[in-house]
Amino acid sequence: MSDALGKARCVAHNGDAHIMRMRPEKIPMLALYDTTAPKRPVNLSLNQDLVAQARNLTTNLSAEVEAMLASFVEQKTLELRNDRERLKKSTDVWNDFNNRHGSIADEFSTL
Image (cartoon, rainbow, N blue to C red; front, side):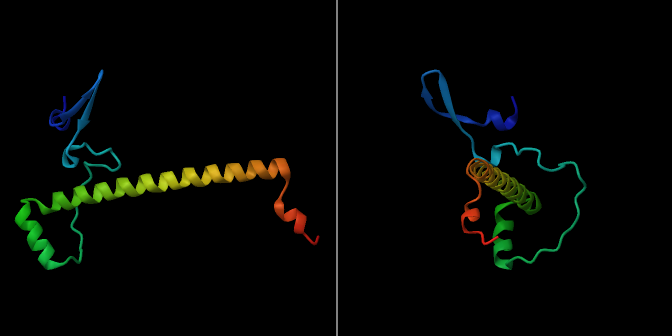
């Protein structure tokens, strides 16, 4: 069992199923990027007070920011995928309607 899964704790028992809650920082990230790629410095403009407070809370600010960035990329990628699927479904429904009944615009065409 992985360390992240080992740190999950059971919060409820319902019949045969256990409901597990994992702390977000312990949930393994999906492989959306090459975690073995070399690191490179980047130039960011951040509020210096916020950076100072963050440095007091962690010994590895780069790792914390990288984890947040990976989470952001994962979330946005999922949102974009869901948007594409929703738009494809809408297009399919509209095309099906158009194939069955013709274009609504045909009724108003002057051609």
